[in-house]
Length: 389
Image (cartoon, rainbow, N blue to C red):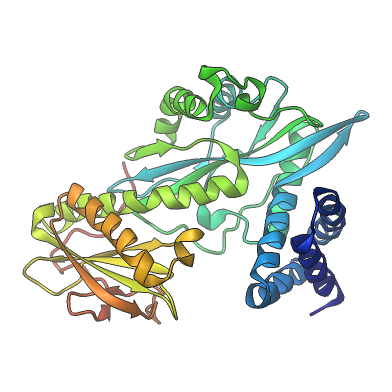
């Protein structure tokens, strides 16, 4: 490891072993200088190397370092006209499902104004100043590194405070995948005077109309017409706008059940089978432990896999041994499938390798015999999701 990576490892281990809040603050300040310096220079390699090293050797220090990396790439302080501001990168995720293609692309000035009005009316504090990215963004277009996330924060944060800055650049090397259920994001930065509340639930603590749940309900209802115009042909659920990383993780969890529902709905039209005529096969995939479940759909009378969904495991779900975790997650998946009309659910025991097609990169899915195969529609089936017209 480089000198920078070695120093990050030592600081993370020191913070993890700290015995008091006073000492915590000392080590946090050291990391608060070291990490932004690397992110500002676009040097993610030392941070990634330190995280890789700690993931293998010291999981407590790994969790400390990744928390600091996330905090310092989604929040910063900016000074303007002698006033210090706290700036936070936020996302408002929209989990969408459709039989068509889920749109991405520019958000008109009128739609931006409407969204800003709803954010300020229902989610953000009275002192908040906000800049939105003028795009509806897919996960493939999001930052891939802490440095890229910091750059989005810095540019949007400066814009929120009235500075002219270059717009954040989207990742465009990978074309957004055509998925039946996926997440789209409204991205913004919020600036408030130092130590002032950012969100309404901080500012009006104790007010029943300003709890997180109340703010979400008001945002979802009032933003609905604007979001519906951005997502034609889609059903969708608006999640609570919040800090960048926590919102992304919540959206990843929420899209999983919707992927199953959208797949069943689409297959009913594509292969002319009702949900009750479909069979689902669920297998845990990974190396030494289950990292994700793969769910395939076949006709009840056939072993041919028509379509598949991936159900990734996150956070504490991954830490459960497969003999403890498997029944909970698979039972949850099976219950959802039955709710959506698929009554025959076959479970493949053990852990299968997470294999992908060498030609197209698509994940393989389990057939009822427990073999991982390429999902393929019958020749007479309707084609893959198309744009909504």
